[in-house]
Every structure is written in structure tokens, then in C-alpha cells.
Image (cartoon, rainbow, N blue to C red; front, side):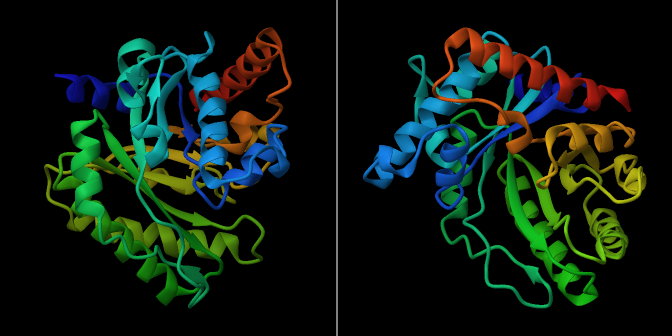
Length: 297
């Protein structure tokens, strides 16, 4: 069964998870970094066509394979489109050996108690059912923590696990992502509170359920080791959080059992103006450096 093979690949495969899930708000920036200015498109549809071309170019590159890339997180529109005549999730798994995940959150609510919860997702059950039918293995949902506020962090984790239980009910594996902003003064204290709140929620999960965690690279190496070792955690992955790739890789390599799930750090240096040879060489270098940091621990 594909799901069993995919779960095994995620838990024990060598490599990292590519985050290719920029959505409406972050797409213009992602395209700018790729060398496509806003003057190149005149509608949201054209913008999404261009970002799909970028993602397709990454995924179809000969250097992007399951040998080094364990999984890839897709935006809903990417899941709904095709790559080389196949649904994107199907192409990833069948042609590349890469486990497909789906970003499901609808963005962030306004800040309160130094955090941003996820906006309501009234159509989530429909999306999850569609994802399951379309070959998606798991999901990802993001909140943001902007300070060591115990009440705020508890609210973020509670909401994340509430959504996770909904995801699990559809037979999918949730990636819980409570991102800690890297620039805050009390980052280490926020991470202390976050680790303990996550542990509480994990302990309350049924024994037959597992989740994944996507966490900001911690101030103190191996801070999240108790979560890495928790029996209800399939895998802990790290987000780069805005660190340049070299720094993100160096920090990641110090955290045993944690692999990367980088977005900007993965696509750093890629350009629409590059020839296929230049593009593949740049992507290959990025993939190898993130792979090396992911397997170092």
C-alpha cells in the first residue's frame, strides 16, 4: 500500500522535505526572488500560472528525486494542476519517489497575545477529502509565535492539534507548524514554552495516531529532542525561518534526528533567466547542501 511505503519513507528515508507551498500572499515575493517581476503578470491567474511553471521546473528537474528529497509540500492550486500530464501529487510519488503533502491553512489571523492563530477553515473537510482522493499523504498548517507569551502559545498549540485531529480523521498525516519568529528577543523562552505545550498535546493523542512537527530551528541545539523521540511523532522537520541557506544548514546539522523542510533556502539562487543547465546545477547544489545537513544528525 502506497501510504505504508510513504510513511516509511518519511520516518526513515534519507533526505528532506521541499516546501513548495507559497500561496497568494507570498507568491509575488517568491516570483520576484525567481527573477519574475510583478509587471510580468496582470492577474492572479497569470501569477499562479507563473508560480506553477517555477514549481514544475523544480519538480521535473533531473536532480529533484526521492534519493535526496523525501517529500514536497504543495499549495492547493499545485495539487489541482498537472505536471507532465499527471496530477501533481501522482507525478511526485510515481515518477520521482517523493511523498506529497498539502498546505491547508488559509493564512493567519490578526495578532493577539503575541501570536497569530490560523484563520477559520470552513471548507477543510472537503479539501481533506479531495486531497486523500488525489494521492496526498499529509498536510501542513502554519501559525506564528511572536513572543514568549504562555497563553498565546498554548492557544496556538491547542488550535494546531484541533486541526490535526480533523486531518487524522481523513487518514492523512498532519504537519503541525507553530513557527517561532527568529528575530524576537525572547525566542529561547518561547521555544521552552512551545516544547512543553506540544508534549502535553502529544501525550493526549490516541496511541495509534502520529503527527509530524515543523519547527523553527531552535536557539539551543537539540532543544526539541524529547519531541523527536516521542512515540506519537512520525518526524520532526525544521523550517529555515528566514536564515540564509548556509546558516540554516549549519544550525540544522546540530539537531539530531531533525530534517529540513526549507522553502526560501531551497530556491535561493534559482532564476527564470537561467538555462536548464544552470538551473539544474544551482538546484543540485542547494539540494545536496540541505541533504547533507539533514542527514548529519
